[in-house]
Amino acid sequence: MGQITLKQVSKYFGDVQVIPPLDLEINDGEFVVFVGPSGCGKSTLLRLIAGLEDVSGGEIHIDGVEASTLPPAKRGLAMVFQSYALYPHMSVRKNIAFPLRMAGMDKAEQDRRIENAASVLNLTDYLDRRPGQLSGGQRQRVAIGRAIVREPAAFLFDEPLSNLDAALRHGMRLEISELHKRLATTMIYVTHDQVEAMTMADKIVVLRAGYIEQVGSALELYRAPRNLFVAGFIGSPKMNLFAGAEAAKQNATTIGVRPEHIGISTESGTWAGTVGVSEHLGSDTFFHVTVEGFAEPVTVRAGGEVDLHYGDKVYLTPELAQLHRFDEQGLRIA
Amino acid sequence: MARSVSTQRKALNTALAWGIGFMIFFPILWTVLTSFKTEAQAIANPPIFINFDWTLENYGIVMERSNYGRFLTNSVIIAAGSTILGILIAVPAAWSMAFVPSRRTKDILLWMLSTKMLPAVGVLYPIYLLCIQLGVLDNRFALVVILMLINLPIIVWMLYTYFREIPGEILEAARMDGASLKAEILYVLTPMAIPGIASTLLLNFILAWNEAFWTLNLTSVDAAPLTAFIASYSSPEGLFFAKLSAASTMAIAPILILGWFSQKQLVRGLTFGAVK
Image (cartoon, rainbow over all chains, first blue to last red; front, top):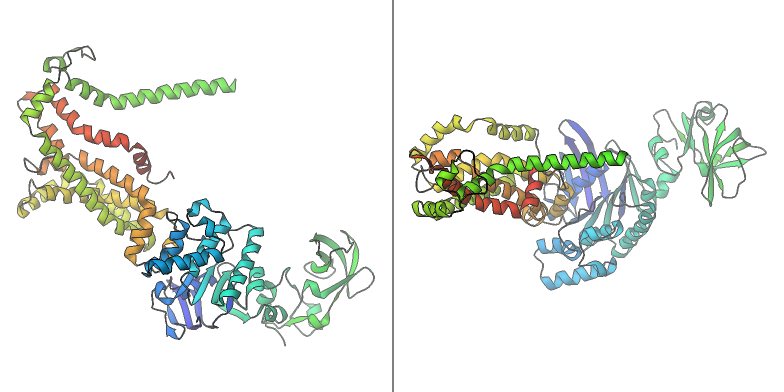
């Protein structure tokens, strides 16, 4: 079980409010990602759930039990840290065994669980090494191993992939998702990388300055961002946002169109512009097109083989059905 | 061209370093040499360097006249006792300052260090009176406590600097893993800080071994350590340089040997954790 409910949870550091009172429901078995720019309070929120920080107000219920005053170990949660936080003086085996040893589990059961975790995480050959002799990805797996042997109610991940290089990050992302499918245990995952959030989460919680901006699945956030912040934050490359005359035509203060929802043509279209920088990714090409009267270049996604060059005259046509409209407060107009 | 200049400079620096090193070492060498001379040769002018009648007579007399073993035992008890007691108190103190600092932590650290700026003699009278009142004058246990208190600021500072190098996340991981505070300090923090704790132990042991002000003022017979043993040979009956040197050599030999075998740790300790 891993049902976590936050009720009016808040956090102050001195007089500074880091988390204003917020409510959040995390269901058993869900993969929840807290995402937001740095300093948005996502790590603090995770640490409040973990018990590494004390709440300033509110309640945290874990499987129905009020846990906000319990010490970290009593909450039945396991955490994977950004720096892995392995014990450098212990072998991999001892690292993984540490939480079991602290719980006073008998040796045979310890060994059984360690072997099990090691085989799941491909660590069997490394059990007698020290963390210093492992690569970044292996260390990360040891940290995960240390978490899974406890069979916790939920796993907490604090930006676990940010110290890995791009290729390894992708691999670990898949491994963690795979692990979640296999264990079906609640996972709470903190990241500033919206790609990680989109690809892994059942439920994304977008945070800004401690406030929850929106909660929803990746597609819900993508299709119907609740406000301008979420619209700009979710999606890569970013949604194009226009204010002024173009927005007024749609009875909105700001309108937004994603790069993939704009057609590009050399013959005809709604907006006439000039091709600026283009980014070729092979499968896709992103063109940054300067349009007369627009403050910023418009980003457009086209196929991989589109033959356009710097300075070419083009026409852009937004798909009106995929247009996002926002009012003067930046909130979505349905 | 450039290369030859740098070689010359290197040679010069090396010579200079050896020269300064020899100057620092010379008093010890001279003490050892003098201990093997006769009293007459010891005060000869011009001084005799090597070319004297080597004799062990002084050592014999010193051994005969005073109970070296008792002084040595006292030194070991006082130095080891104050060091161990100091570490036991300093580890939790440094832990709290390094990992749960408050707004006043820096002030407290400075305040602790400031006690080392007071000349010891400034508090001799009150401490002497306290010792009399408590009936612990010339008492080994009292010296253990006093020397521990005197060196405590340095021990706390050194451990604090070492602990600061240990990432807090590792301790948080231990907390998540269910370690109690005791288990966290015992199984995680201490093993990681072993090099730091070892050099702190060593340095403090040496400081306590060499401490002369309090040991001379607060002891007479029962608790007198090797410092008192040396002092007893610079006595009113006149100066006996050869015997004084023999006593000094015997007093510093144990600590010199300890220092020789632990050079690496000591250098690490003295650089206060700056060198990883």
